[in-house]
Length: 413
Image (cartoon, rainbow, N blue to C red; front, side):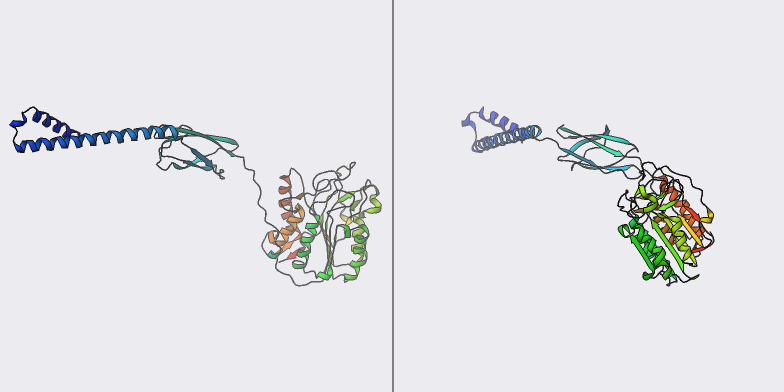
């Protein structure tokens, strides 16, 4: 258009230099046409200039008034250390850099960038976005990847894993004392006892009417003695009935080395009067003349409680040599720890460690040769594998103990 306008201007100039009287009518018409065309061309040029000037002003205003906005977030690192950075700007980006590395421009300003975080340290990322006008915005984000601790996965107890066994000539006394009247609590002892009730019914074939369960205040010294001395003999058929005893709670030795189960109302200063001696319980069990006795004892005699605190200020861990003659030949005793160790509980398991793995073993985990039967030896092998390893994660030593015939079938699935 501009070139045409220049040509028209030149033609018009030449035409006006000629005497108007010398022009023919056709030439006069051509001159008028050129003049009109020139006028129109000038008007178009003026409009184009105005539009260009307006666009330039608008661009300058946009450049001055529009601020680039950058948003950036990062996911948590996965187990391999990989994480994802999500970036979004409010404008077309001409450049995006992460820690100086150019990622490139995007019309929609949207990015998804994969990065790696080192274990045990903080990873910082400086993100710089720039738009077409040179406006920039910067964000700094941090990602933490802690060192992973290996935690052995454990499954919740599930008594449904045990096939319901036929009813047998069997009796069970189950005692759980968690909230003591005068001494610190034994964490999760009640949960241990309540759970074992269903294992006794479903897995050991004990009828409900042949189960005596004592919890907390119901497990005082009188009720415990009555359960073994009065209730039990009525339920036992001489040389035929199998008796199971489950105890979860505190135990304590006296100064002369005697071992006690601590009932609900025990007074640490009157141990001989308010506690129940283990020998007394064994004597009552023997007097009932059952076919066999199996005792599961989730207690310790170290003078400390399940959480590790001292039960008695003057208590010291003791080292008692087990008297094999303390139990008759038809007794099998599985206990949580040696006499100098703590019988621990776990907030993750919500049980005593020994009780949890004992019941997991009864679900079938202790059937090491997969023959459908669990012997005393198999159960002990299973417990001395699982319990110490779990206790070690709590910086404790706990080694389950066993007395009795290792070949005896403890449980048939």
